[in-house]
Amino acid sequence: MVRQDGVTRLLLPLLALSFMILGCATHPPAPTDLADIRVHVSAEFAFQSGMRTAVLPFTVVGHPERARDVSAADTFSMELAEAGFVIVDSTIVYRNDLQLGGLVPGADLNAVRRELSVELVALGTVNYVYRGSQSLLGKGQYLEDSASVRIVSLTTGEVVVIATARATGGSLAAELGRAIKGALGQP
Image 1 (cartoon, rainbow, N blue to C red):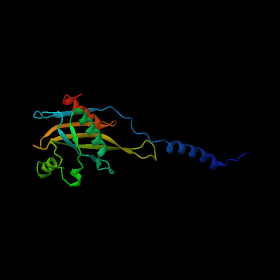
Image 2 (image 1 turned 90 degrees about the horizontal axis):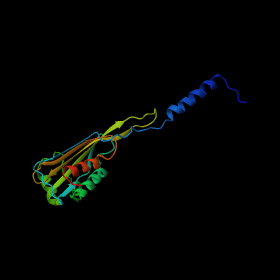
Image 3 (image 1 turned 45 degrees about the vertical axis):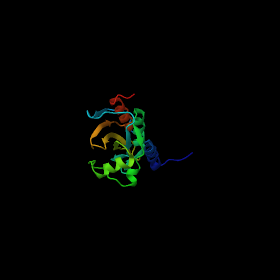
Image 4 (image 1 turned 120 degrees about the horizontal axis):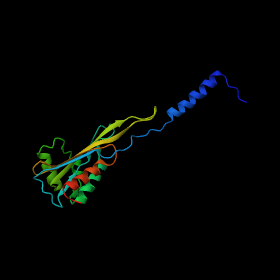
């Protein structure tokens, strides 16, 4: 038989409580349905199947370890391709260090149009938010909070389609692509 002194009697319940608290798994917040998707198509934009479009990697905001999201751009590209857009490889933009941040019609937009032979360029942004852990030692995580996409005419510099979405779960890029397809009357 093991003899328990006062310290042991106090430590055992504290250790048990510590394991219960510290051993809790980190559970991310439950995903919710998309709260808001908005799409605006310019009245001057006449969609035609076969329009050549470059989809650039999405810019990431709010995540310290990511600057671009190629996967989101690829997911969005698939939705546009299903709508009838012709998706053109856009790595030339980064190989030539072209600057599209301000999206002012000028030399860089003309260079993209000339090098890729495209009519449109799609620029997307994914915004992340940090969600803390539910346990004392667990790490929080960065989750997609919102996203937006602009499809810009390289001829005029006009934003011909803009779409935004807010959510905490699911693929925002896919939802934006489906919403744009619907707004353009494509299945």
